[in-house]
Length: 183
Image (cartoon, rainbow, N blue to C red; front, side, top):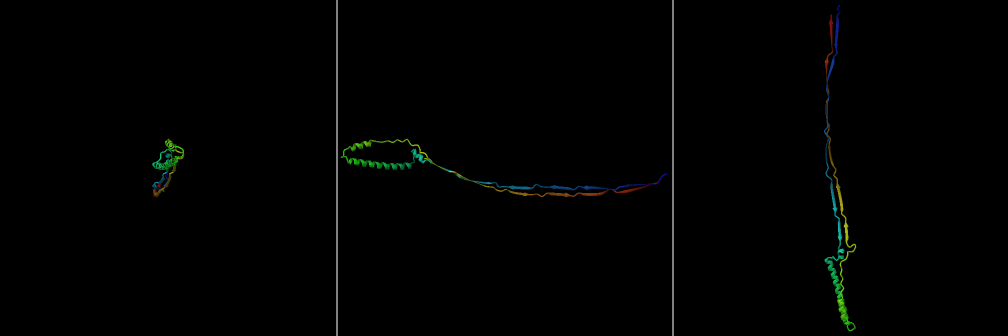
């Protein structure tokens, strides 16, 4: 015996989701830096030192005199010799005036005129401190002028692009019920 049968078959509904993924793009350009600096300026001012050496006295001690000094000395010496000669002539004249007094003035004068003294000088050693030295040291002034750097910075903003994600929802399978009768 066959019984009637009811056969029920149900199918669940299925939802399908497709997602377009979000896209995010970040880009940052480097900052632009400009640095300029003029070179430092150096100024040096120098007054030269002076050295003065005066060896006139040392040369005179060695009898290496200038023509002007020698002329002055010869003029003084000549005047002195003329005065000595005038004195000698006067003295001899006085002796001859008194010839009546006992003595031999002419013979004495002849003997004196034959007497000569010769002075021979080989030169002298310069005296100590006869060379005069004077020194003025140099003066140096150094000036620096430092120029500050000129720094320019340009910051670039980041580039941000964003595309949001989008879900697509659909029915992958609709729900259904199948009913079947069998007799």
